[in-house]
Image (tube, rainbow, N blue to C red; front, side):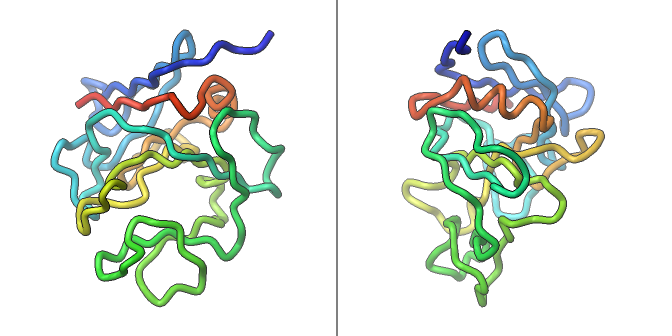
Length: 177
């Protein structure tokens, strides 16, 4: 039986540890990691906070050498070794996918730590892009023990594929402060 689509994914911060939370997508509930600074309404580049608000999910990325192609209603793109994401406010491509090598500050999408084996691109600071307001806010795989992220939302590897089956281009993610 195919899982039913969800319109909203809600992320709630834990009252006990602001760097952790729970993600709810219909009847699917899972623990998640948040930014090292918890959540923030006034997000800035490098502040370590997950942004509060309701956002579209633009697309998904996956490492084809680290598992099967995920089933999802989202646009899906393979991560390539030459993929990066600009986080340099001086770069005209700030908060966008960039080819590597890249002379400005960036994140590498092809990571050895498996955090980006599956990535959902959250539409934070995308229309229009405001330099310094924060970049690369993703939903990705969690570190062991759900250690904090740099501002993203992170979930367990076993759960992300179940989540992806339930979402599509009309799904929104709401991070509650």
